Amino acid sequence: MAGIVSVSRSDLEGRRKKLRQKRQMKIIQTIWQTFAVSSLAGGLLWMVTQPIWVLRTPKDIDISGNHLLSREAIESLLVVSYPQSLWRIEPYGIAESLKQQPTIAQATVSRRLFPPGLIVQIHERVPVAIAYSGYSRAIAQSRGEQRNTDSDHKKVSVGLLDASGVWIPVEKYTSLNPNLKLPSLKVFGLPEQYRPYWDQLYHALIQSSVNVMEIDFQDPTNLILKTELGNIHLGAPSSLLPEQIKVMAQMRHLPAQLNPNQVEYIDLKNPEFPLVQMNQKNKSLTPQLPKK
Image (cartoon, helix red, strand yellow):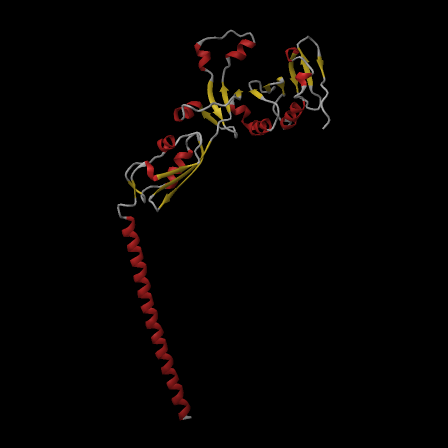
């Protein structure tokens, strides 16, 4: 029994020694890890405080995604002062300020470490139409109204529309790009009236083979398109717009069958029964559409 007790005590002593060694190694590892992390943090802190991490001129900014606006125009919109520490700049704040600009739909800004600078990526709002909002002298005169005063003229505001229907003050674009080529499509009416239908209508029109020059939303009960076929009445804007545009495309050969000067307008309020209203009183005809 004595031999057994002696062996057990030796075993316990050996285990205690190993545990002490493990604790010592763990302490040493912890010290080294703390030293390494502290050294790394200190090194990084020393690095970022060096004068090389400074945004010195606009040339240190990489700008991409701009097609309508020049680099200089984008630089003028950046809220950045020079010189400035790269680490004091807030990329998120700069991106948000860019997105507040009517001419810019999206923007992302990030720091660039080598070489020190900023990366700015933008997505512009591309104008697809000129929008006239307010009193229209031309429409008033067509209705026999005589209102040619300067105050009437001032009631018309002019802007630009992008493909999603966002109104862009025309001066915002022209001030940044004086050579901007304005779109040929014209839209008349109040934006709040046609905005719910704009996306659906515009995407249907750009897929159509019929050229549309003007879109008149001034009468909420009758949307009028001025096209190469003549004026087309669509009635109140509705979910039928895509079908009405398809029927309009099927009538693209109408000028070869009728004298355009004799056509007053084309009625597509019911796309299943299109009508051509002639200039003569009480005369209309139903065009023969090609089979689908």
